Amino acid sequence: MNIIQLKSFLLEGNKWRKVLFGLPVIIVILMLWLDYSDSSTELGRASYHTQINQNSCQTDRLSGDSGASYGESTENGIKYNVRTPLNYDPTILHPLLLVFSPAGSNRAKTEKTTGLTLPATSAGFIIAYADHPELSPSTTVELGTIPHLMAKKWCIDEGQVYITGHSDGGTSAMALAFMIGTRHIPRAIAPSAAGITYEDLRDRKCPEPLSVMIIHSNKDKLFPGYGQQSAGWWASCNKCDPIPDRLENGCVAYTGCANGIKTLYCEGDQPHSQWPQRGNQIIEFFTNSEHIAGVEHLKNK
Image (tube, rainbow, N blue to C red):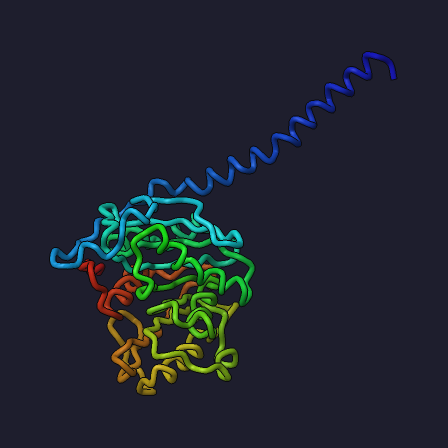
């Protein structure tokens, strides 16, 4: 190798080293772009009651920003984004809506797919979208730490946590509600296309009666019939009448449930991978399932 060839080799080597050193930077920039690519999301304005305790939270201990916040993380690195009402009042306790992502998605994609931000924040919720971790009991428990972490930064009522999610996200949402150690976290759940059958639930001890809205498609080829099976188990746990009534919105409702809680099964005809177009119904279900103090919720028809 002569001197000219050596110089050429070194120059080429420097180019590749620059590429290799620059690649992590490019990846980080790309991840940030993907995270912030939903920054145009429209936030709603909550209608706050005038006659409430305005000192529900001590604002000097809360650092969470109003509006859109990105890249929050659990202890083991599950990322989530947070959205508050446009007119967020940090002195008032807010209900929390937690949305879990399906496999192959992330927090930003899930926000766009579900379209829940505007109706949720208009209804007075703070809403958070979590990434999809590898599905397991331990990651489900990790997802369940998000409400407590958020309550350290935003004025959130940990007694009013509402959870939804699709596919693996729906599975995690449902699992949190029946697993020992986490079943106390949700006030109500609305899992969609969850991969849990009656056989998975049969030997489990029922949690305390809980408002549940099971969403599933009759064309779901990955988890066929799972929704009806799990809805029946929840209706039994909630001590409802065994024969449900059909509602005008296409759902069926089990009546006579303990403590007046609601148990619904809503069936669609979309493929498994598609989020059901029931966002407003989910928000309405959560707002009607319990009395939510502090915020006068808007009805989304």
